[in-house]
Length: 246
Image 1 (cartoon, rainbow, N blue to C red):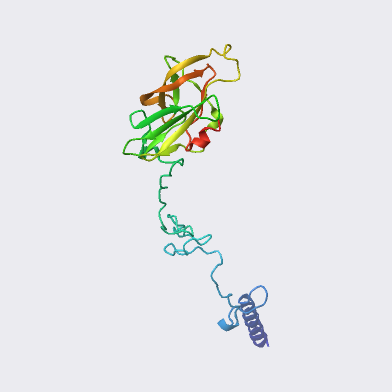
Image 2 (cartoon, rainbow, N blue to C red):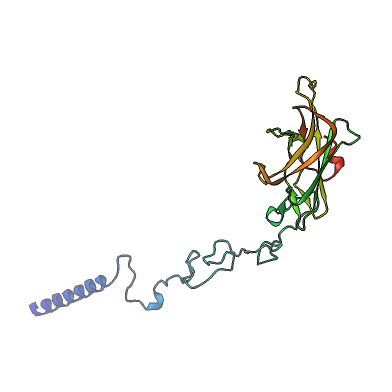
């Protein structure tokens, strides 16, 4: 009887140990870790990240926004569409008489390359008309206004600033520029030191109008030319009509 009980107790102990061993092989939520691989949860398929950087050797289309390439997509020329080389800008051609011109292309007008005359026009009264004609072989530029000195006067006559033209007067060989001289102002002759003059020295202004350039032209004035200290001269004009409006 004791032998039977001993064997029964030993069998029960063995069964208990087997149950504990089986429980130890399970996880905390009761799932069996020994299950087949197909029963395990599968990982989500991977996909390329939306913000993953492009490979270092890839180039974005030229001019594309946000691209990593080095091309800007902009042109360096002057084509109509702003890209490519296009047609190169052409320098402006020298303007004709009375127009603008490149000062480096022509000589300044001086007493050496012009013939200067001074006459009294019938209208308006109390005026002189000065004409400078290009006698040289090159086009010359008549800058600003003539600088006038009557007889032995040291000071030049005043300049009528309101007569300044839109561009420097350009004279091809044989062409002329004109300037008018108002011989007296509004003051009475006795107040403005009036006198009869006989000759006139005409000097030509430099490009920056800071002084004269070249030799002066000296002309004999019409008889009984009367002037005062108020005398003033216009800028060079392209026509005598424009000059005599001042």
